[in-house]
Length: 406
Image 1: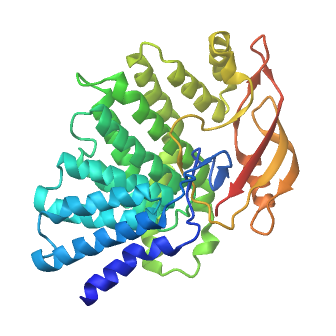
Image 2 (image 1 turned 90 degrees about the vertical axis):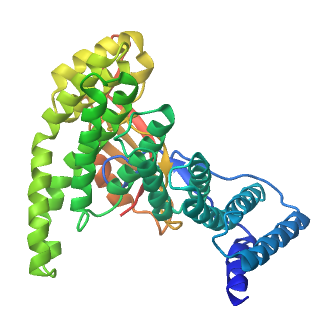
Image 3 (image 1 turned 180 degrees about the horizontal axis):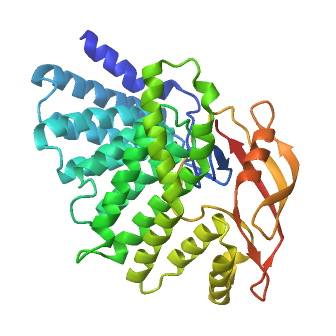
């Protein structure tokens, strides 16, 4: 009985909160530690009747009583917990819904197997709830688990399994872009190797298909951007490691060497990968643009401008305003900003080399903002240039709001 009371208290705790915090979906961070404030809050204006909440509480108590008689692992309980989780979602109680999905999925895994359609559906619903809550740590764990049980990039792709993979990859990329790589180098290296293996299976040989290849290539390209941004300053920043144990530093040195090799080969690796993906496509506009952007980022402006001009003839909207690179390689992700992290708004000029100049602070969010670090980060970012009506590169003015997340 004591266990039931504790579990019930946990399930009902979220209902007592007057205004639960909901997450925000934002574009993938640009550079390292910079998040563009251009997101949509995942929330609703549902007004919940207290009688509905009381009815839901009663149903939870009934299932708990049933569990005490049948045992926690009785197979009839899994679907009951899932049904209660759905009801909690309808009642706009995401914290309780997350706990109920967790109970239901644990039961389904024990009784119905790890890869059943029923479990994948319930897991996806739980993931949607975790997105609303902004619980990025739990969200990452469940995205990885779903990716693993639906093929882990080894089985033949379906539209559904590819979607699960891309969602997991995008979440990991956002984590790498907003966290210190110290003690995480090995994770970055393993992720890069896995992505590379997945792309080789999806983009080469008889099973190669543009449908699977293009979105996967874009994710690895985004990772290569992060490696280009992060590795050199990270490896050079040795003074922050003075207080660490010698064995830890020795392990880090090995990982640093591997990261340096990845950075050294990043440009050519990205070019070769994109050229192979373009060869599979019937209409490779987005990949040709991605390749031109990659060349522009590394200062190969002549080759990049030739492609920009060609694409401008048929898609001028792509060059109406300068865009921070990387651009359009991933889907939206859950913001990792803390509640007290406020944006700073800057107006600046993007020159013909794609660099931000003449930055002018328009507004800052207050004590939780970090305008100086935002300014420095914007200066380090390369932008796809704007083109005039003749397809020539021109300077352009940009106004944007950004958060610094380190």
